[in-house]
Image 1 (tube, rainbow, N blue to C red):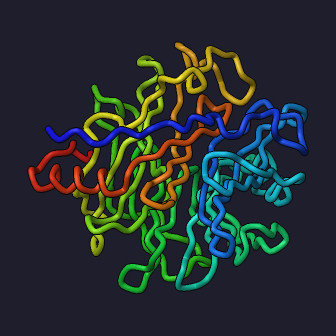
Image 2 (image 1 turned 45 degrees about the horizontal axis):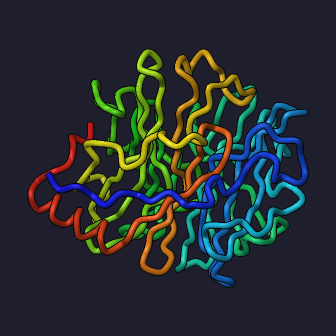
Image 3 (image 1 turned 180 degrees about the vertical axis):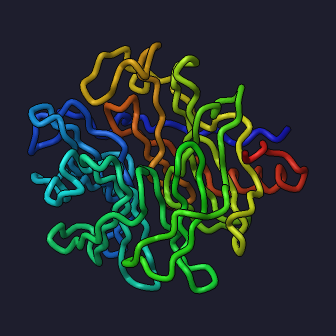
Length: 330
C-alpha cells in the first residue's frame, strides 16, 4: 500500500503551554482552532484554557508570525462564560474563513446544565474580540464536535458534526438559523482499529485537487486506553458525503512525551484514561507556503503542531485513491 508522507512535529513543540496564559492560572492550554488572518498573514489560534481557580474553560487568542512560534497571547479571553449556554465552559473552537463573505465562522462547545452544545460565533476580524458576534447553539441536543466548510456547496452551507459516535454531514441555508441534526453518515468507528470507539471532524476541511482534505480524530475504547489519534480523509468536492479516502492507520498518534500525560490532571476524568492521557486531537489546518500545518491538542495539556508537504501528501493520496486504497469509512 502507498505510504503517506509523515507529519513532522514542530521542533518548537509544545507551542502553547499552560504557564503562558497571561489572564488565568491554567492547568491546560490545548485544543486550538487555527486560521490565517487574511489581513496580516499571521496564524491565529483560539486556544482552550482550563482555568485552575474556576475549573472552567475559556478561549485565548494566540498569534504566530511564522506558524511554529507563538509571538503573543492576548491578556484577556476572547470568549468566556457570558451566556447561559456557556455557564460551565467555552471549549474547543474551530475556525473557518468564508472568503466569499469576508468573515470567519467559529464553532465551539458551550457547556452548561443542558450539556455540551455546538455554538457559533462570527467575526470579520479575528484579532478584535469586540467584533465577535455570538449566535448561540446551532444544533439540538448534546454535541461537541463541528466544523463548517469554507465554501457553500449548491448554495448551502455544509457542516460536519458528531452525534456520538459518528460524523454526519448537514446542510443549512443560513449560518444564523438552527442547523438540521440529520444527515448522511460520513465517518464512523471501526472495531479493532485506531478508531474503534468514535470519530469526529478535526479541523475544517481545505479544498484540494483531489477533494476536501479533512484531518479527523479517532479514539479507541476506554478498555483499549481511550487513545486519541489523527487520520486523513478526502471527501468529494461536489458530494462531500462521498468519502474518497480514509486513513487505515493514524497519520499522527501519541508518541512524543508532551502527547502523553500519566496524570492525574484536573481537566479530564482520569477514569476515562486508564493508561494515562494519550491524546493527539487535531483542530486546526492551515496552508502556509508549500506545507500544510496541523495544530492539535497534546495530552489535553498543551498545543502542538506538525507540518507536511502539500505536494507530497496530495501526490501520495492521488495514487492511493487510484488504487482503491484507504479504509472503510464506517
